Image (cartoon, rainbow, N blue to C red; front, side, top):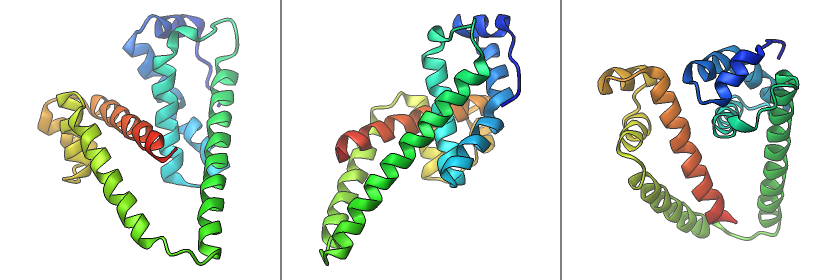
Length: 180
């Protein structure tokens, strides 16, 4: 993560300037994703964590300290997210291995949980703002690409990516509340 963002860009980002955020996003997205991938070794999960990182960056933009290294700031956030992901994965895998080794048959319980999660996800999607719900549905249920969705809804690809990221964040939050 060697890209250097100037103080003026960071100050604009703090004030909610979308162009400044886009500049930071474009400048750092692939580097952050590669860094996270080096920890967790999963392309899909690295992409999801990277998107979460940038959503969190936008939501907490006012707390960015422009007097300190932005590279270090992103590096620390990415490292912590990766380590938290790995800890959660370890706990989950340990839990599953415990039940598998004990001979416990959890397939019917898994079916029940899967149905409950499906209903929960449907409920979360139903409560989303109309555009987010529509973008999520076109992406996940109809399998359209972000570009196809942007063209169909007459919006930007970046907006589609942002709305999908927010939708997935809402769903993950609901699922984590459900599971714990």
